[in-house]
Image (cartoon, rainbow over all chains, first blue to last red; front, side, top):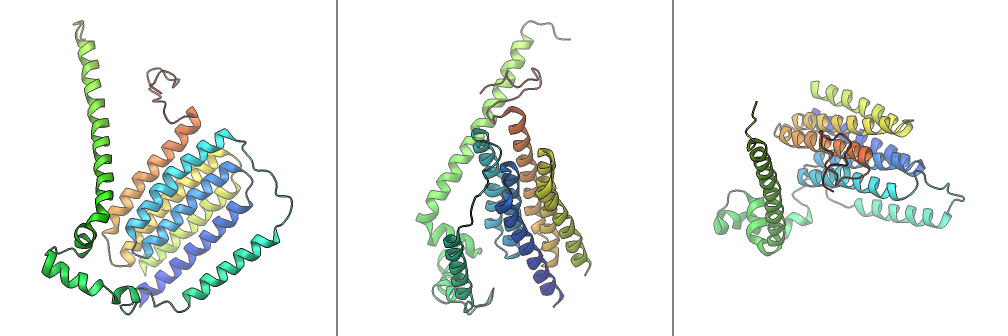
Length: 195
Length: 100
């Protein structure tokens, strides 16, 4: 399969870029460069999430990681100096802990089922009931919608409230701006010296 | 095959933008590196959609492009005014006239 090979090649290139960016973030002492590189890091991870078909996670990563948190880091940077102090010595203990945790995580992925496998444990437990139930009980054609809105309705209620609040906020912002403009126009129109 | 070449042709500029972001002597080099890297990510996501046979990724790529633009504007505005709360209206020109 050609597209599978291409996907593997893209994954490897993106992972390489991710590693280069991470090393750049660690080695850079210039805080503005670090902020921009962390934005680039988030964009690469978002592209990697897209290759895993997790588009919603990718979108959150790009919005929060590359958008808001870069601005927040720049805001924090204005309160401090522009460059980081030089690290004096190499800490051996933390490096060993990181290497051990990394090795344990890689060891944990060895027995994981392949990506997209229907034999994975997550697809065996309750997912068949959801698939059958969303057709027979909920009667919603989209399985994701039926799980989010019905099976996990109480869990999703909080998210729905957040999105509703955000929508009301946007509506008020846009509505208020328009009304102010209209009032300004009225003020300029009242003298009657329209060109 | 064509899309594979396109993906390769996008990853190489990503590497170059990353190099500029790492080395970039001035602040604006780095802002531009971040912005152009975001653009290449958008294009790569579109190409990945075609490779995987799901061209509906194009909508998502469009949203990414929008967000990349807004993010770059936010960063540049931050460096212009040191504050994101200032409206920076064009009539006064100095950014002090807006509401805080």
